[in-house]
Length: 360
Image (cartoon, rainbow, N blue to C red; front, top):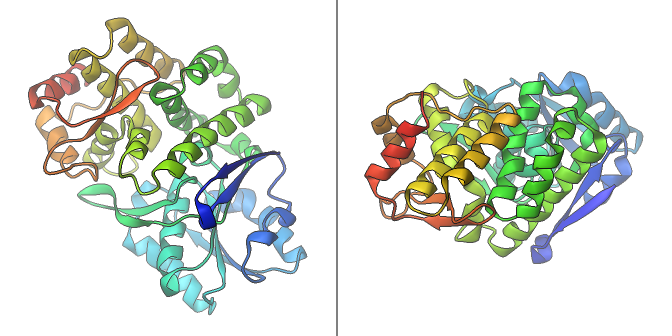
């Protein structure tokens, strides 16, 4: 088992990474306020992993309330959030009850947001079961639901007490989910960790084949990167925004097509290529750099072209993004491979040209 610490003073917490962790209640018990938890999952993940975690907790003397949600990004909304509150209230869960999210990014976001609201805040633990969640969304305390006008627009920063990433759960994922998770893995190499990007270029096939050692190394390296960024800028006032490479373009794709049509990682991959194209148009990347960005995403089986929504529609959707400041699109671009920057001065015409060059 590997451990990465997120240094947030009195709210610091560990990320445990390894195999066979779901059945080890002793890893969770020190982070429970009382011997009562609400275990939130969805109808896909629960049949695969709920019993192992719930049984381990019950055998350790913990009372478990199970809450099962419908699966998919399309259900990341107020109605589904209320199902969590229904479960908590129906079971008479108290302020000391710990909410545990067992699932991917959607489950983690919604369970975390519910934990931040229920009785004005209850303890929260993340047990991510997808690659995307293990390397990114479970770490850092971002919780949210979607709105028809924008993705993740309603939520809160609410840190977990523990992240428990059992990489055995990745063996049950569909191939499409593994590929989508790789978009967030690649992101860390592009924005701040060139040696890791080079490792990915050499080991991508091992990750696609779900080699346990490669998966543990990649999850740990991503978590180290994210923990450093979150510790420096918890509420995204500056550096943390770099983690959104490709996301402003990608969120436009998700919203424009309808939530769930493209997976988040698929949209981020196409968005990262758009960001690289725009970076080149602004003189920050070479043509070969853009080809390198495109090539690693292609090798991962990810889309490198966005749907042709029309440049005007992309811009309209992007203006709803959380990173818009004083009406200006604040984008994450690349000042060279391995060096992300925050940029809000890109001419609108160049943004539109980059979108058009990467769609179809």
